[in-house]
Amino acid sequence: MREYEVDERNTYNMDEKGFFVGVASRSKRVFSKAFWQFKERTEAIKDGNREWVTLIACVCASGEALPPALVHQGSSGIQST
Image (cartoon, rainbow, N blue to C red; front, top):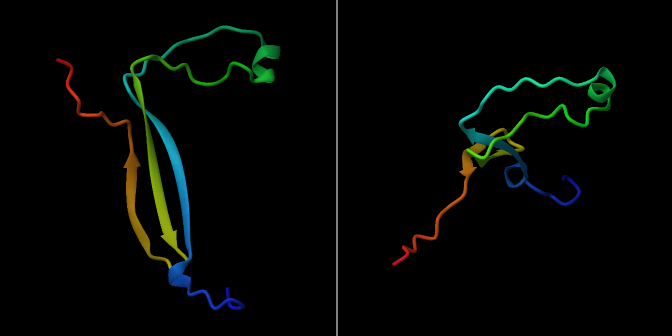
């Protein structure tokens, strides 16, 4: 940054994290220890009632942070007739 005289106020780091939002249900599953260790099916069960939302955070090298942003599915606003 010094070599190219880039001001720390012009250097940002951005990160994003996705979340499922909606009705969740707890489920129990039974499988073998070998299957668990293989970790093929250890992820959370997802149902069709969830929406994906992404949180975006951005912090400047000087320590200042921009307000976080949420990205979610929009609608076209066109009504069917």
